[in-house]
Structures are given as C-alpha cells and as structure tokens.
Image: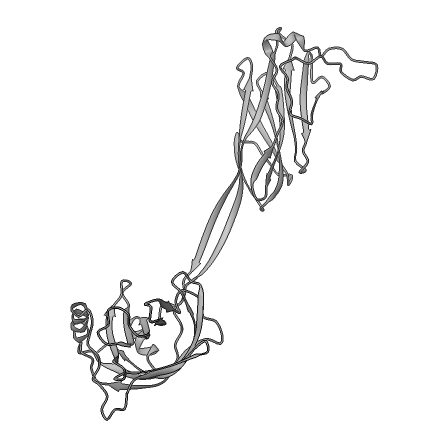
Length: 371
C-alpha cells in the first residue's frame, strides 16, 4: 500500500524537488569522467546542480527509477546533465540496485529474411472452346506439379526455368517453356505468337522435303520477337501438327511456345497455353527483444540535444557496475532512496541510432526504490 501511495504522488508531481542539499559544502552526489577526450565534473549543490529521483510505473507494468543530475528549475538553455534510468519489475529492481554488474537496456536484434516464391497460373485456350483436362508443370530442379495454379519457393536471385504442358479434350497438347530471372529487378523471358484460325488453310504444313523436314508458308499474322525462330514439330497424329517458337536471350534466359494445329474436322482448330505470374518476394523480420530490465544512460548537452545508450548496442568493453549501495533519506515524494557508487563505460547514440561519443565515468548517484 505504501508503494501504491508513492505511485499516486509520482503522477501528481511532474517535477519532484531535489534531495536535501549537502552540509559543510561537501557534495554527497557527484559524477566525473570523459566524453571522448573531453573531461567533465558535476556535483549536486554546486553551480545550481541537484540530484533528482523518482520511482514511477511504466506502460508494461514494470517500474522505472529515474536518477537525474541536472540544473535546478531550468526549462531551456540548461547546462549539460546526466540521467540514469533503471527499469524492471519490483523484484528485478531489488536485484539490479545492488553491488555488481547491471545490463544495459538496448534495442533487440533484427533478422530480416526474404522469401522468393514462383506464383504461377496456367492460362490455356482452345479455338473451339474445348476445356483443358490437365496441366503438367516441370521446374528447374526436376520437380513437377499438376494443378492449374502452383507456388514454388526458390532459393533466391537467379534464373529459373518452368515448363507447362496442357492437354485438352481431343488429346490436343500445347507446350510453353518460360524462364524467370530475379536479380536487382524481375523479368520474364518468353516468346509468343498467334495463328489466325479463320485463315488456317494459308498455313501449309503437309509437304516435306526429301530429308523429312517440313516446308512451311507462315501466315502474315505471325510476328515474332527479335531473335526468335519458328519450327514445325513432326506430326503428333493424323492431321495434327505443333508449331513452336523459341528464343534465346543474352542474359541466359530461354523460352519456347508451341501451339498445336488440328486439321480435322476442317477448318480446324488451335490449342495453346501461356504461363502467367512471376516471382514474388516476402520480407519477414524477426525481432529478438533486448533485456527487459537494466539501465539506460542519457546525456543532454547545452543545446538540449539528448544522447542515450538504448538506441544502439552496447558491446564489450562497455559496462555499468554498482560498487556500493547504501540507504539514503527519502526523496520529496516520500520514496526511499539508495546512495549508489557507480562506474560505467558506454557508447552514446543520437535519437536515430547513429553513434555519437563514448563516455566513461565514476561517481555517486541517488535512486528511488520500492518501499
């Protein structure tokens, strides 16, 4: 109940008054050390500096014990000052505020994992409206799938070849091979063409030379990308031929597209397919939180800029230690306090997390503690 009363007082008092001034001109609370190579020395009761303490609850249900060695009653253009904030549960504070090492509270670690996935859909058609019966996918690693839409995770940037064979009623097959590349940007390597079924007889596919190669007269409507070639595959059945386009690109991508032409019953039909979709990326960030209890050191310069230890990491040899801990008198909020002898080394960061200066210091500060 006493602690609860102290919490209420903490909310009511926005700026608790300083602990009593030292007697006989000998400061009880002092701090000295170096900011990079610049020395500093502060003492409560000297040059209008005082030691402020307060204990208050935090939003996460823990307690915060804030110790400030700052200029008294100074809203702007204040002399440089230091703050030491200890956070944790009531039990954690009892453990922290004793002789020994105190961990720094600092940002958690962020691990970013990017997943690359081929999300593909078979787009098949038949000029006579015959439905597709099956889709057969073949992937770069030898795996297969037989659904109309597929997802396949890929290792990362690179070139990935995909094949799709579609079979319709009447056993008409169409084939497409397409490469997907992903480096700094995504692109798909593909070729395509169309056959005008209304003038299908202008495509001559039934005559062969002595070497068994087909002789073709192409429709004017078949336009190919630069570097792509057309060919006619051997007959698949009676009056059934596949016309294929293939392209090889400079970056190593290659692609093919085959359409099957049926001449029975006349005037015939064409079945074709297409691979839609591409590579999608998903970025997952896993955050491992830092310590839930410990200390934050803050420094405010004469311009009002604040630098702290909790916007960056504190690694060896940075440390904070309490070398002595003795009871002291209550602060103005009626909260009991401790007189701590401290020693620290730390890296200070600006609000954006950029390194500023290193600091080292020793001294005696006061902290409020639970009743």
